[in-house]
Image 1: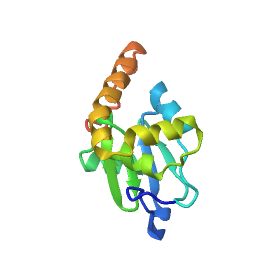
Image 2: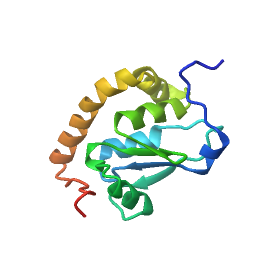
Image 3: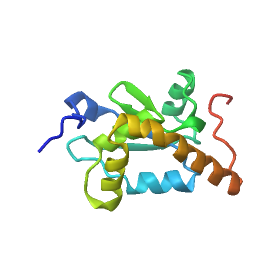
Length: 140
């Protein structure tokens, strides 16, 4: 049974599905390890935003600040921050406690937009406590 707000992945999307996240952030690493994408969507390429890559260069050229949130590419389109979290949630499975919780919290774009600043604040606090510097992709 499909819900009306489920994101349907056309065939061309399967060619490009990338997530650029903070590989030094313990919270971000845990999230990408637990997140499961539906098989019909395709494979999700995980890219550490702290490492030099074609994706990081493209995001920097577009003015997308990775210190303000991770970025998700679906097909030719990039999503950032709460939009990326919302889209990734819709692409995810509903199996397991973590993925069901993520769906309940972030399947609604409004709820994702309201909750994302809190997640970002927790991430930034954790990075400061761990003495991990910002990604700073727009200045490098």
